[in-house]
Image 1 (cartoon, rainbow, N blue to C red):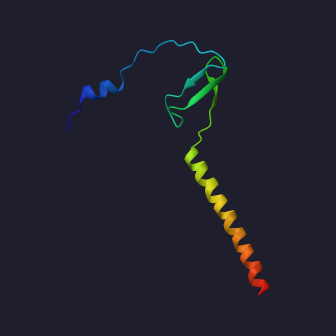
Image 2 (image 1 turned 90 degrees about the vertical axis):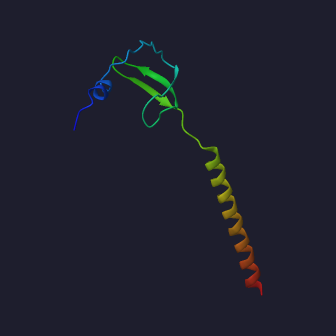
Image 3 (image 1 turned 90 degrees about the horizontal axis):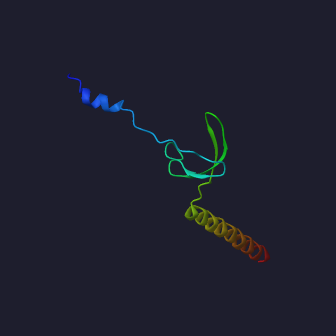
Amino acid sequence: MPIDNEFYSTLFDAKETKDIQFKDNQFVRVKKGVYEGDLAKISRIRKNNVDVALVPRINVQDVLKKMREESLKSNDEQVILANKDEILKR
């Protein structure tokens, strides 16, 4: 099976990087990993790494759905209790 040297050579090409100066309390966007695309705030800069605080992900639709379900559940329990009292009176 022939080896495609052009394919493998592109795997190891080094890209030029820009020197970017970060500052404490600066907001940045995560480019790779699980949090790709999320907003973060730089909390501390060290020689070889940076500590960031991520803004939590909140899916408003899921929160509203859960709130509705809990509301319906509590209403159902109240109806059941009211019916129980009526039945016991008979």
